Length: 171
Image (tube, rainbow, N blue to C red; front, top):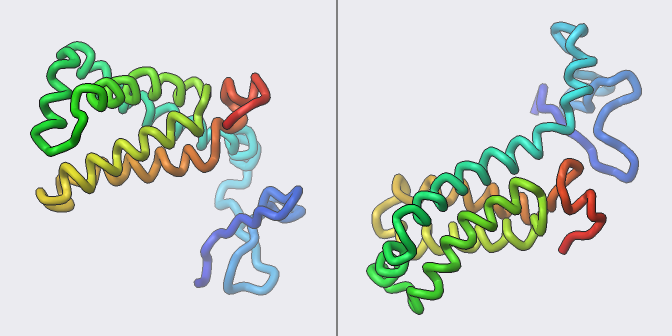
């Protein structure tokens, strides 16, 4: 596996070697060197931003869809669930709207992140495997992707840039 970058997450290690490179497979003592070394400072500055970007962008996208359900009215969600045999459809319709609005907003803010991300991941799994699976992977794909991302967010928690971290508690 020559050239694959690996970050080791032992206690106190960020995966960087002493001189800022990354450990690599396939080359004894080999290091990944930047093609443009002048970018090292920039990369070090923005290294912690990847996770909040994923958390915020995926949640904002879900919030957009949730807000569409709010605008259309709750009565459109429940009958849609009933159509696919998901019961009790009315209370679960409220859960869907809640997850995709309040839950998504909380994940954006990093508040109750693990709980809301897990609830959203479960919702996406139900949609993918109960509702869309009979229609083929092309119809499931987006829900599987969102489900995996929200499951990963649930495992990771709010992260450094979250209200969970600011409060000092999370589930």
